[in-house]
Image 1 (cartoon, rainbow, N blue to C red):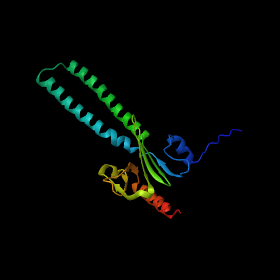
Image 2: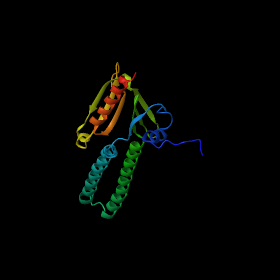
Image 3: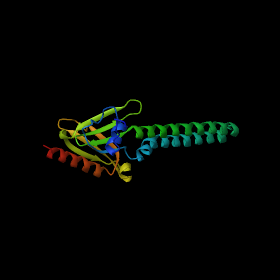
Image 4: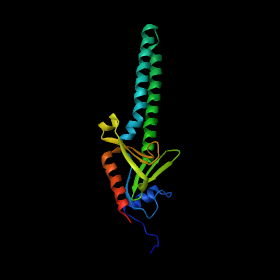
Length: 190
């Protein structure tokens, strides 16, 4: 029998997935989430809309050149074909990068701290001990709010902003409620 046991609980799976010492073994993981998958579309959306706008402008200019200047329609078709492939490639890259960003972004709440992990090429981790949390704020910009998303920020005393921000969290009020509950439980601990 192996002396190595595997923790199959959610806490154990999260600890193995997060790894690299982000969560000490004596802390209970209350939740471990990615942001909402809508974040992929919110991140890639502006790039895709810009590409569509640029393609419409180029299409207008090519049509103008074809009708006003007698531009060869075969040449404009070839140009539009190349431009289409470039647009598809840039769109695929934008969605691919947004997906990788979503995949690498984690929000973890333990019984002692709130953690955000992010970064595709350069991983960053920020944590805030729950005993130092002075403010839990929720921000819901228009488009995320329509998708029932919001940002939950945590700040300690003496800071000029939020130290930990969980972006594009589904049902942010529930996330903030869980944080406050964990803070209150920590205060009740001896």
